[in-house]
Length: 244
Image 1 (cartoon, rainbow, N blue to C red):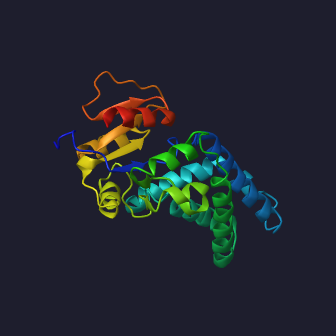
Image 2 (cartoon, rainbow, N blue to C red):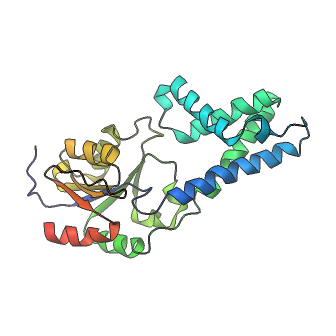
Image 3 (tube, one colour):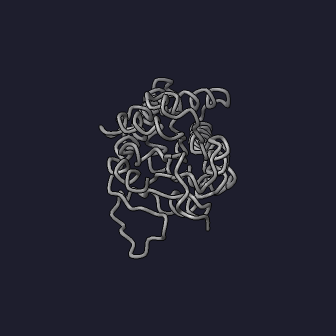
């Protein structure tokens, strides 16, 4: 393992549940885009039974699991899985193939509108402003947030959408892609994220240091060297000051 005394020059950040609370965002997004689609299809007056009666939200969620199992290489591309699931259900409901494609795509446009109605933690903008003066920054996410649609984009000239590259974390490839673009060896980089499996373990295996946002209070008894447990992103500057 690479020595932990190398100076840090780069920071990589997970997004969902690291820089903002993602639970409420996803509840609103899940319900919002599916309600929109249900209303849009009802106006077509194809059947007396509404689409949400034929395919309740739970059925949509089950269909996504089925699609992911059927297409394992695309399991991390959540946008594609959602759109493919909607397309299949719309065809089964009775829409013509082209209409099904059009409405599935339109529903996903609504999904992305809701998906980006999020609020970073109050400390995040100032924190990233400060850190960008001293470190090269990158984002690595399994989610389908498009960072360019957020004000935070100015802090992240490098953003890796791991699912879209068909290598979702904990795969090492998104970390390696970010490090290559940052021009940083793992020993001089720290990853900040909330998932033990998807953030902490893969980054540490590469030799990166890790600031683990223990959002769910897991508090394992044995934390490896090079992993630093935090309760919230606001604690990151103090950790970096100690390490420097």
